[in-house]
Length: 354
Image 1 (cartoon, rainbow, N blue to C red):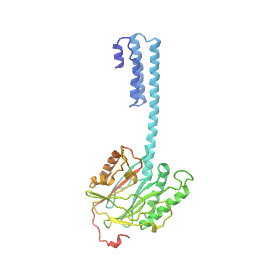
Image 2 (cartoon, one colour):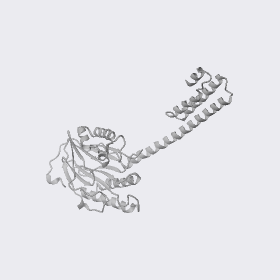
Image 3 (tube, one colour):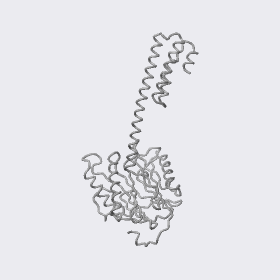
Image 4 (tube, helix red, strand yellow):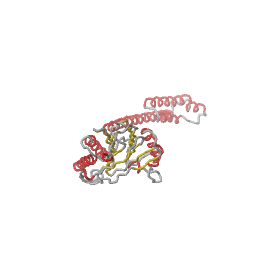
């Protein structure tokens, strides 16, 4: 179009230099091959314009053709660099996704009568995993044990500590009969890790810990047992209603000190068929909008109490990102656990704390 208009205009008007627009625009949405081809066509069009005007051999026309050829070559060069960076980023994302699958394994969709869905939102750009963690396993006796936690800090150090705690939970969850003993075992693992890898200086020296919430959901009764180690209390969603399930005697976070099982208590609460339990990290409730107000998780979650776990998390994810303007200030993890209706055998109230 530029070449045609240039030919139709009077000889004292030159539009040929505008031909550089063609390869420049092409490079924004295509690769180096097509960009190079369009650049070649632009140089050919510039030469055709000069030939039609009878100035092909003039110094001005030759300089314009050479300049357009050089600019087209530079555009192709930068397009090649961009393509290489895109491939490198794709490899980094692939490694991040693989790391996430190895360290933070996706929770099963169903464990016994429980339907489960999980969501992880990393605050770091292009990251797939950070310091938040969760895990679930089925134990002997027909119950399910779950953990959700938050490592203080970000980056590789937080990922390393999260990996340690996940490995410790997956092993210790099958070795200890009660949640207090399990919490004490996890605390010892984190404390040993801090003793071996405590930085000598820096902001994290002496201030490393992990908040965690341990949950045990038996299959033989409509209840759940919980031990909190400085972690936000979960939400219990029933049709049209959402309420917090606070721990009456929460323990300090893991890694603060070597504490025995006596330091941890068990809270028992009703978890009826049809209810949904929402576990989350502080990256959710501490997310702020532009006015500085915290995200009202309980109020928002109450809108979708009758949604299945996958749909519930989809709604919360979309609502949370819209609330903060598309970017979180901290990692965020959410787990939705729905208890399906099943018949329960008779159980005695004194067995609830066993």
